Image (cartoon, rainbow, N blue to C red; front, side, top):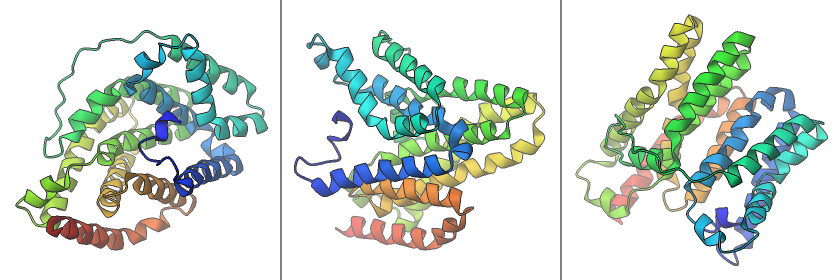
Length: 291
């Protein structure tokens, strides 16, 4: 698939197998715990919306008469394990809605949106780059609308889904990478460099979280305001994984997914390994500065 060309070499069968295994395991875990993940399913398919609007090969595909069918089949294959879960759970209406949204997405015209100035701290410039590249800011109104739905229906799981979605958005800049030369020529030590990255992530996540916090205040959801502190944890963890697997972004994505999934099922126990992950990230940064 086009999606994985940057991650998988032409004859790298191991990488292809790991991708298939990762998606199959995720689909199996969701199937076994469907009642827990049911309300989070829309966020899985939200990824394809973000990907569609940031891909650069659509104009090239338009040279083929059946390019819309190609996109439809590609997105269908990409999410086929999750379609299978919905099919086995007899969620036919859910499947129909997703197919309808996907059809509208493929046929939607491309808009030239006005550039938005973000308040993010610029120590990590990829916060600005990621938000402009993937149009992430337009997900915020959706999350806020879901908050109103959750409060109106008294569905706490929907609120948890919003918090998780916001936290994952804050992780996206950490999947981008500065060059090794930038790290080598930075005057800070590895520990200080990482601490500044932490500070940057916390400040920018706070900016991102502010509209959600204000919405909860307006709705008098004071008890849920305390839960917002957990939104900071996942982006900081992903930052550590970024520097541990700096030379392999694909491994970062795999271990990030496995770590988050295992933390949900094991009630956060894997987070106890954070001090060891931190030491490993410092060690890798030192190696990058001296290579």
